Amino acid sequence: MTPTARLSAAIELLDTVLSGVNAERALTNWARGNRYAGSKDRRAIRDYVFDALRCLRSYAWLGGAGEATPTGRQVMIGALRANGVDLDILFSGERFSPEPLTDAERDLPPLDGAPRGVRLDTPDWLLPMFDAALGADADAVLAKCRERSAVFLRVNRRKTTMEQAIEMLADDDIVAARHGLSEGALIVTEGARAVARSLAYLDGAVEVQDAGSQAIINTLPIEDGQSVLDYCAGGGGKALALACKADVSMTAHDIDPSRMQDIAPRSERAGVTIRTVGVAQLDDTYDLVVADVPCSGSGSWSRAPQAKWALTPERLTELTEIQAQILNEVAPRVAKGGVLGYMTCSLFEAENGDQITGFLARHPEFSVEVTRLITPLEGADGFFVCVLRKSA
Image 1 (cartoon, rainbow, N blue to C red):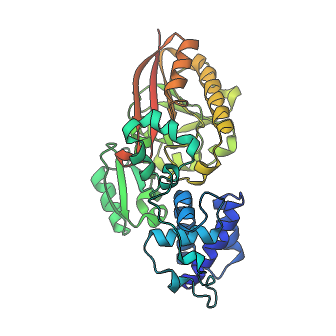
Image 2 (spheres, one colour; image 1 turned 135 degrees about the vertical axis):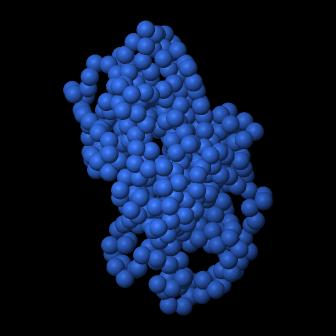
């Protein structure tokens, strides 16, 4: 595909996504219907779409939509303007190219005069929540959320060392370096798309996991012989990390068992054992219970930007109710003297500190040992963790 044909495809896809279709689903359906598009074409179009979603309000403003719902064409005009691209080259009207710019599209406002939420690509109703949680860092964090996320790996110390992992990756033309946020974290600087085909990955020497996620796992007290429950396990990333840290009896549970289907092959690759169970198979108590609860994902919107625009006040309220319910469910499953690790990938107090305050009022047998908020300014996604100890 030519560069202009890729642009036309991106405009078409953005129109679909802006109508409410999930971006991943739209891209998959487009690829199936356009088999002529090669892997480089698909990657370029995907980058167009996700970069546009990260910066949707500012690109829409630069494309002439103001604060109205934009078209895919307006968003891509704004994206190219923001990146200093000569629009006339791409909007030529030639075969497979978008139609030439109109006079109105040549006379569009700068971003300087736009409202704060437009400049920071954030819904206005969320700005006070970011300010309350982050204070003077709010604008800098929101600016980071407009950038593409890096690919991070967790080195499996059961199988290799940091140095050996870096060398193994280099053999497959993947360049990785240590990341200071977590002692086992690597950031991939070149060849990220080849990770899943690399020997280091296939042999279980490394696993894909955000450095911030690794860092909050490191706050949990874990030692050999413990019984550990990952209550909202999903794909098992945190369960894998915990099982690789110590010889524990590791159990994973999720309300939707289908989300855990990748845990078995991932744990086999990593050389650890993780038991996946439903509610009926859970033990009465565990030494350590991890509750990585459903949340707004506001710390990871650079990785999942469509979620930023889909979140509503009603959905946020629903999420906080679910979080409180999960905390109430897991509290009895923490053994006396044991630990509960509450985690989110949110930056909002409503999902973090406020949840802990409410939980302690309902369950005074717990006390806080450690809390930590990681923001994108530390070089990874944003996460919150609170480590709570149950009285003996």
